[in-house]
Image (tube, rainbow, N blue to C red; front, top):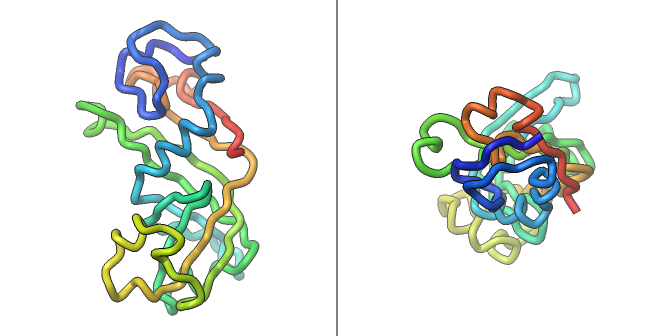
Length: 177
């Protein structure tokens, strides 16, 4: 159950009123994608061919309901993630005001990776925003296209700091499409 929404709501829900489960239903796919389109950082997690878990912070951009990451061709990520591999993504979504210093909301989702070898796709044609975030030497890197599947699992979207300690009030599942 969603609780009091007197704090800044990072997913665009109404503020300043008592809410019920109806608010969880109003946390829509479109609202989550709008929040993801504003972010430039995510943590991707995957399993190596040897079965070892790995996580890595990445610069990213969302476009056309996919998340894009550029990595150096010889990097760990480029060597370990192959086409079709499952990748878990967690995106911290900045909350406003003082809460931005204390706790971020998050959106987590499962994706399938499509790996575009260096030079096979113009990064700027996929996402001008991503191209602008990268240092010039990275513009010719390997492009990972991450297509979300299933549902977003959000934590803290619309929940007060106090309510973030109560999973029932802080968690929502929203279809990715």
